[in-house]
Amino acid sequence: MPFLGQDWRSPGQSWVKTEEGWKKTTTDDKNNNVSVQRLVINRELRNGAVSEELWKLKYFHREKWIYVHKGSTKERHGYCTLGEAFNRLDFCSAIKDTRRFNYVVRLLELIAKSQLPSLSGVAQKNYMNILERVVQKVLDDQQNVRPIKELLQTLYVSLCGLVQDMGKSVLVGNINIWVHRMENILQWQQQLDNIQINRPTNTGMTLTDLPASLQLNIMHSLSDGRDLVSLGQVCPELGTLTEDRLLWKKLCQYHFTDRQIRKRLLVSDKGHLEWKKMYFKLSRCYPHREQYSDTLHFCTHCHILFWKDINHPCTANNPESCTMSLSPQDFINLFKF
Image (cartoon, rainbow, N blue to C red; front, side):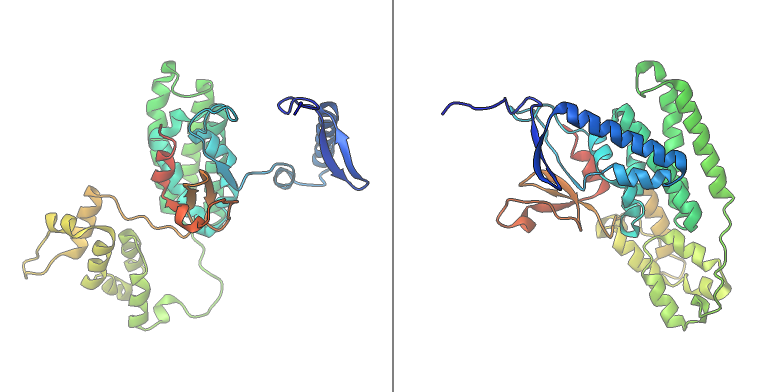
């Protein structure tokens, strides 16, 4: 059968749906439409009809899922990198979601430790933009201050070493740009240090008004021992409850294996196990167990990366059997090839 029409790989003509029906458009028409759209954006910004954040959401679309390809084929050239996935996935909206916030923060921390030089210039710029939004969200909400402080400190230490090796092309861009970004990090750290947690204005029931048994049940839902220590500093009554041995025992068993616990046993003079001291000793030797409300998922059948609550067009007979959850470290390992 002869091939009729233009080559499908060339720009050629395309069909678009209009109010009057389907019409043909060429490459010139597309360029004209883009130019008109830019004029509309500039006019709206100049007149103050729409804010910068709104028109970014209006005219720029982030993909909800991406295809991860690790090699070149006849149909698809090149491969998907960590920087490309970081740019195309909608992480800006993810930090606004409480379920995904800790996941994104942990991913930013892992990238800051070892993966920042592997990102492209656009991805590095996008990384700093997302980090700025994360800091602004913490300053506005007055929540998750400690993990963001740790993230900024990790990033600053990494940049100090990378900037010194600037001649080895480990970072993209002028060194003055990165020095300016490091100054911004120091400024963000200062803002977080000076943050003042406002007491709630409502006069309803507080944690200290609850019975001791309910207070202890709430403490059992905390997964970080540092949060328990901070909670115990609120008042003497809560401080007594946070010293509960069963509370720290369950915390150790949640984060660490039995073998790890047996290697770090600490016994008091009375013959009891010091679970609180063991927890902090184990924390210095082994990583904590990570748990997130919402994570990125990967379909082994379609090779598609997507968020948990956003499905993808899977062609498998049983899509659930082909889907696996990715931790932040698994997300980075996915692009090591």
